[in-house]
Length: 311
Image (cartoon, rainbow, N blue to C red; front, side, top):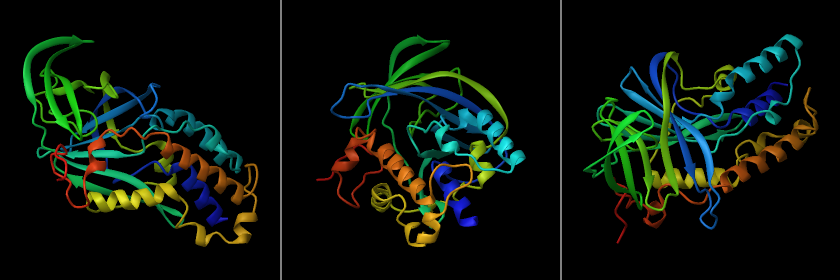
């Protein structure tokens, strides 16, 4: 039963990462509109969050799972009271992006983290870089929502970006990897308008944790990040995307695969097939990358600015 429950935990909490700590944070909500497919005009929308903590760091991630915390708490408490498991995978709305991005102040060094599997447990892998954004600050000013902003432009990752920042918010930070302007980035989008983030609001978080209720309850945080060179990270994560259950599969005996899961339809094998399809569909949903330039770089030739191509 312990192995069955481990499989269930993995299936519901793979999209998570990094370290735990109690902090306070300023949470900034960004609406991201993006075109997931290169050959389609379809635009997806997702709310993402930038949490700037009192411990000289920020955490950027998709807000989808965290936004469901209150619902999940009710469901898990009901399961605990009844003493019976329930298939909550049918209820959870999955995120559009699985990564977490950390920035350390004041260097603004970036750590990009994803989760993979290690047997029955999640594990974190990532890479570190120090993007040097060559911002050109212009005189143009604009009111965006309630924010007074000023225009700036740069090139990064193979795209030309326009940002609007506000000196009224004294953080030299922004969504995704963006940083380095004399105020918080309120809006940033690329010239093709494939990716566009707009600040929607903010609030103060007491007793802050970067994790969702599910991650904390299931102890599915993945532990210490295994940091590696970006090319090695891309290779390892690419292998995971092709076969998410590769490290778990040798441990799944016929006996385990044939067992039913209390409160759920089908066997462990049925659930694995269902989840495998879900993860593969998730990863295939986006082929229009934020940093398309990286794919043109040879192994070991990734420039720290993220703007120069290999010869």
